[in-house]
Length: 339
Ligand code: NAD
Ligand code: UFG
Image (cartoon, rainbow, N blue to C red; front, side, top):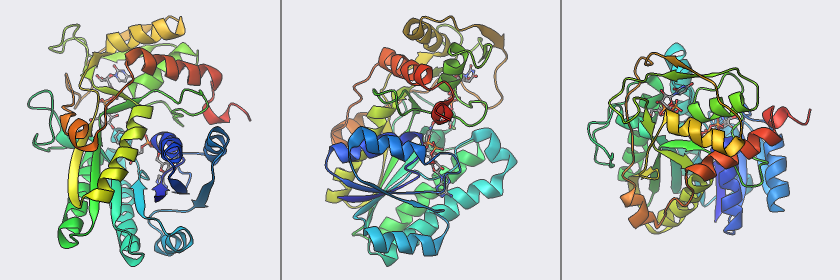
């Protein structure tokens, strides 16, 4: 298939490009580089020896989207482009609604004009809010607690209404759990521009000497060691879920959510221990209180994705820690390491 990948220069998008090309798909990227660098696509090209057409532009720019649709004529779109920082979304709600909602609407309208009927959407487990039961399946009630989470749920609803009105259209809603890890080449990985928002990139920066210590938020949760449990998913497994979703969208119509996680969860302390083992570096920690809005545990029930997409996670925790360390130690300043 010919696949337009919005946000393809980002963390998950770049890994997905490689998996798409490995399965024979043709790819084209639209990215405004607000949270990425064009260097990413150079690395994707050299890792794949494949052709990556790219356009610099914003998903909210209708005319740009028409140009891209006309030049590339995609059979399907994978829509990664968006903003993802939970804290920032509370400070800049209109900006988040604009990029994540107006961006999705503008893209859908351009797809309609170009008669493109398949979309794979980057949603998040955050649409569930604090889980009422575990493991969390797709029937779990949705109750996002952040502006960011609400943009993801609203975009899911828009896509569901779009497919209801257009029965020949398909929207696959992938609810990612906690993506971590890096490409086995160690040439692609997560490259936060600022202080990392998430656990794994923060630990990696402590290990490489860029930060002194990790603050552990809460040790009094009702979990075996008192720290938070999450379902971490290797980014290469996550990337492959998009390839499986494309095949699904080629054979099915309508909108359908899928949890993309391993079905296992690990505590903050277990994550630190696995990273210490992978890196042979100590990770100093400082115990802090719980973060407001944080919760004890999350874990995916991914059986729907296993059964209907034919997708299974294959990487374990030590793969996640080892690949993150390989990327971070080879690229201590991320994609700026070559400057
Ligand atoms: P990322 O920031 O690395 O990638 C997003 C890409 O989109 C970047 O390359 C950025 O430059 C681009 N972009 C942003 N706004 C744009 C716009 N208006 N027009 C064009 N391009 C734009 O993030 P990621 O971790 O790869 O996440 C990809 C998607 O997955 C996002 O939609 C995110 O909300 C979602 N998601 C991420 C996580 C996670 O923990 N990483 C979890 C659940 C869902
Ligand atoms: N944590 C720390 N110290 C840190 C960072 C995180 O102790 O410096 C802890 C958190 O309290 C949590 C665990 O590590 O227990 C994982 O934290 P992350 O921020 O990596 O992941 P979250 O599950 O809290 O957040 C993720 C996504 C968000 C999404 C949220 C809700 O990053 O985008 O899930 O589903 F909104």
